[in-house]
Every structure is written in C-alpha cells, then in structure tokens.
Length: 113
Length: 115
Image: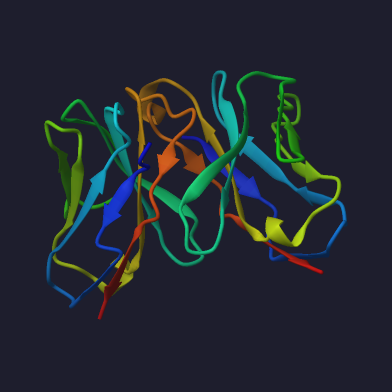
C-alpha cells in the first residue's frame, strides 16, 4: 500500500510570495492533517480536513489556508510568505479523524529567502 | 489546551545502554498517549501508544506506561542499538472540543547511539 505522499520535496520562495504544498493520503483515508516542524520548535498543528471540510485549525494566521479535494488529496497554501515560515511541513492521514495512529509523509521543506 | 513536556536532549548513549526519555503531559478528560519516532530524512512513524491509565505500550523493545497519577508516559529501552538513533516525540490527544483531531507533540528528543 502506498503511503502518504507529499510534493514537492523542496520549495524555495522569496518573502512575500505564495507557496502551495500538496499531499495525497493513504488510500481509504478521509482525513488529512498538516503540521509545521520549524527548527527547534517541535511539531505545531496547522489544519485538519475531513470529507472536504476544515474540521480544526491551529494557532496560525489566516494566510495559512488549504483545501481538500473530492479524492481526499489536499493542498496547503501559504500567502505573503515570511522568513519564519521556513520549515518542514508534514502531512498526515487517517480514517475519519481517528488520530490513533496518524500516518505521516516525508514532508516538504519550504525555504523562504 | 493540551501540552507535552519532554526531557531536553540531545541524548548520547553507547550501544547496549539503557534508555529513558521522560515525558509529562497536561490534558483534560481521558487522553491517549503516543510515542513517535523520526529517522533522518523521513516523516514520523508511530512507535507505541496507550489509550487508558496503566496501559503499557510496547514495540521494537521500547516500552512506555500510561501513569495518570503522575501524568507521565516515559519511554524506555533496555539495550539501545545504533539503529535507534533518531528523534523521539511524545504526543497526546483527547477527543472533544478544540482538541478533536489534533495531536499535541512535545519538542522532540534527539537520540544518538554510538557503537
């Protein structure tokens, strides 16, 4: 079974630009979660989507947004990029909000210069 | 909201040494507890979990016991190997309110095992 896949692996953007990150969940999973892993800060919960709807959101500004498509894949958009947005963005999936366990992808490394 | 405090690293051990990584949590209700491991260049993998008080999670020689009285979930392994070198994350979740669908992670502990 294919795992959670994320693209691109690396992304370099300039401050003020927009970044789009993509995630495909494990087949049969309906929920997609996004986490930010900034250096030295552990993992911070960003967003949870299930069945196309945003179900929960972490303490991030509105310029972090996303959506989930009918095939359950998801994209994360970060507008007006700031230097501190540089981080590893991890996507995870599960079935209907059951976080026990979450299955993670290998992440997208976003660098803002 | 929920919170997790892990012992600060990095932790450096020799092969076959005993490992303990401390984890304490704050959560309401009846939380579930997890340990995840992140190998270099990879995403996180579930190592073990416990869903109620006094449960012991175990996998690959690692163990952790859910202690509600001390709000702790310390990770232990009797004899570490070089291949155990990774970052270990403790996490907590409980169903309900603003925590629904959300895993709260600790800061992570870097473990390096030398031959």
